[in-house]
Length: 237
Image (tube, rainbow, N blue to C red; front, side, top):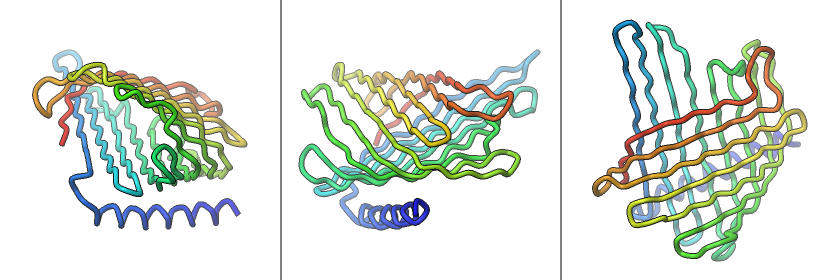
């Protein structure tokens, strides 16, 4: 039954995405972030951070795409390789509430998992709006699929709770905090994304971010908590 619901949700997301692409392109706001560090000499190390985010707000729907990747190598050997992406489609019920469908995929080469993906649907509501500050909450249910490096695959039902806080500190600075928990019958995943962005000139900004991910159940000899601190240049369009 859960798999059938997940397939229905996937079809719904494809349909809403197709309609979004056909709508006014000016309703979309997008950002691309790049961070790169390279050292040479006694240690030959490179780290590349890429992130892309695009949001569209229309009369009856909202759409949010997010892609995040990191790769590090040391003396020719890959030491970190992560990819995280999601797409969420909201159908507005009124000015402050909506129902949503969401699909996400997480792939960390050194986590012991080949991947972890989930499909959820639920209810979203604007809880606070002062003009400079907004707070939105989501609650939903769905299905998570996990596959270990060994090839063992598992499926479990999950409850998703999430909150997004945004504060326009000034014309040139913005703070954002995202918190989520995906509570499953076998494991629970918590995620926190904190960032502050400062405008440099026009469409170019600098962003400092901290991401914390905690998985309550992991393969043997793997850490439950991962943290990532990044400094990136952001181009908005």
